[in-house]
Amino acid sequence: MNERKALLFALGAVLLWSTVATAFKITLSYFTPVQMLFLSSGFSILALVLVAGVQGKLSLIGDVFRSRPLFFVSMGLINPLAYYLVLFAAYDLLPASQAQPLNYSWAITLTLMAAFFLGHPIRRYDIWAILFGYLGVVVIATKGDILGLQFDSPLGVGLALFSTILWSSYWILNAKNSADPVLSVLLGFIVSLPLSGAMSLWEGAWQPVPWQGWFAVGYVGFFEMGITFVLWLTALKSTENTARISNLIFISPFISLLLLATIIGEEIHLATIVGLVLIVVGLLIQQMKRQSN
Image (cartoon, rainbow, N blue to C red):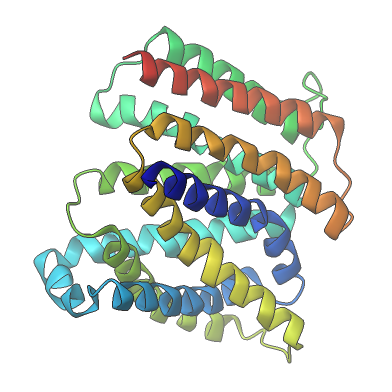
């Protein structure tokens, strides 16, 4: 029964994550990246407060923060503040079909950063994973013109890759955090909300927005940055076969490309598909390495 429950939660998370790229592009047609970060963070807080309340953990949030205030402030500055601001800016500059696969290479970046900062060994499997992963990145970023190395938006590509560094940094620093994960993420959003709000006021680009824009930003905040995280955690805690559940995440980027093509009519280049396959092959090599250890 637990395995079936884990599978359902994992599939729910994967399906919701598959809509992220489409939701990002729709939302960015109504808001700037800074505004999107501020509003989606507010909806994320609402989602996580509801979850923590249902779990009976909300009363513990003050004690959790007081146990390591500087740590939680630092984490909030990295994620969601810096990470999502950079990621949203990348989506604003690039087609979502490019930004999403580039960001998906974060696990490859994590391997390199863990080796550099934590002294983790890089083995033969890791080298192959890195080669496949970053070859895929170059194929996507250049639309297949590898030798020419021509980028439609060098800044957009740079931001998408920088987001992988921020996300990897967050997980490396968070590795020894023993606090409840839902409360930890909630504290990050609470810390970042006043800062993103102040940035949006300083930017001064607010305009009247129809209900479609509010629905889109609410969807991003409530699901991509809130509920989906809880679904995935629940799936991993409920299963005895973590590898099988984790492998489901590889479905997500391909569903995402299909949604981008059908819902917002974005052109999906063959190079994007080839590059994404290379990245996924690299990630699968990492998965096989972990399972064989």
